Image (tube, one colour):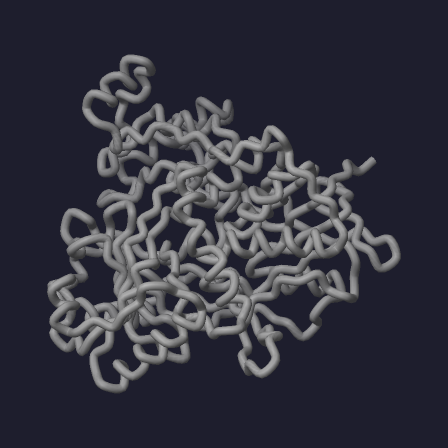
Length: 498
């Protein structure tokens, strides 16, 4: 017999995990399913890690509304979840008169959206703040409420906080179909079995259109993924003056190719924005790297290809939903709704940028939708918004490091030299509320393998630790799931076969 829940959430990206975390405040039995072997492996694992101030979204859209709702919450959320966040601000850089006119339009749009303290600064002031900026700079829009966040840590922390407050998470569990009772959805089918619920929330990201179509909702809505390619620069070779976010003046393709610091010390460059098919096409192309590099040098001419240590691509769930505000002709807005055609279903779709920045606001809107639908939400008296952080060895003082090693010697064994990640940190993640069971899961949580050697030193040791702790052969340890084993067989087995 299928276990019954109050709410099932389909999708373990930042939106699904943030919705789970906010809903865990209430007396609800919640299940979140994720088709991959870890949470946050889709769009949430490959983006610019920028919290947008809110001036890009067209006034009247759900993008603008949820971005504004979320903006003032980030200090509180990051503090509660123990996630690094810096209200660094961001710049939109103009290099000619026409672009300066666009900055004026963005300034007015931001004011309409409620973005505070924005101003247009002169070329002289921009050069003073960031000496590496192009000498062609004509001026810039400064938005001090923009910021930088650790996207990987945020997704994990939101999910862990939900789990610690009673939410169940099933990984490696793809959605297959709905269970129906007349025109009401009363659960889902998965390869693990059926699960019943009073509400199902679609937070399936790139596959949100497939889910809503199985619910008989919005048959004309389609996700057209946009691939964005990035490169990562070695922090030992190149850095901006401070934790700076530099956008070009936007075009019809989007916000443009950004040159931005990260909270891990690297500078990243990207993304471009090219439609792809199939949905999982994360290919990094020679043409794409040329495109983003050309764009980056228009902002910061001194960057050098020799500084590149890695590249990657992410996918944005671009949709074709129209803005529902009367008088606004805009296609590509968020979908956040309880559809009239079917009961027991909350539909979230097209949550591209600023989806990360808007995720708390989206979660709050889901709560409002449930209340408007007559759901009685009673707060748990023992709900705990705090997610306790685990030690990050490189962030501790020498005195704190010595005390930690004395208490737990595994923190004295460095596994990743580039980022100074210890065995103790890796063990803590393997035994965390949402266990890390693959190399990439360890990488996202601890930052191992992200430095100059890109895992060349630590990978064999991490595989050994995973094997020992999970009690499985090293050949069964994968990079990111079933189709990505590291090892085929033991070297001595080759001699025996010969």
